[in-house]
Image (cartoon, rainbow, N blue to C red; front, side, top):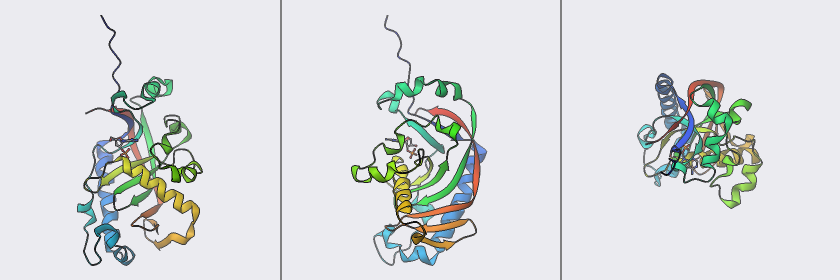
Length: 224
Ligand code: 2AM
């Protein structure tokens, strides 16, 4: 008889507790409402709609992806390189099912994705796979991404535009962080109660939160 292959999940990550999920959904929707009404945002509306005068309701524009989580390793049931090695890491086994407090430090919006930037602690970085930041990053952007601190891609996808896959959120976030690194203050647009809002061209917006939001999560895996 053949030995049973250990099953690998769709992905590993930190999953927000359901009451936290509700709280985050509400407060991030509030941010979209604020952004939607800003003159600065209206000025660049055509980057979302493709038309100059058309209105956009950001709350409808993005479709929520549940459960809300911060992906560590996308395995696709073992099809992705390094999945088995990741599952077998002692730190992954030891942390499985444990709670973790994730720190959300910013929010990002692009015509494709809406996400929350997560700042990982050194302990949490042990669960961040080597090379995860640059996976799928276009050749031309690699140098910029490699100059960012490890774990810069960590995020929670809050929503995607119709037809956009969640994997895009991390790529959009990296693009924003690279642009910010290249020409920092230049992009600051507005001081909001929530924090500092920056515009980075081509419909890309980043809100650096005045105060980080702590989210209770569980490190676990997801399979459909
Ligand atoms: P996300 O982490 O940006 O939300 C299931 O599709 C989950 O795995 C989503 O959360 C998604 O993106 C993430 N994911 C999908 N494909 C991926 C990839 N190639 N690399 C990293 N994460 C991926």
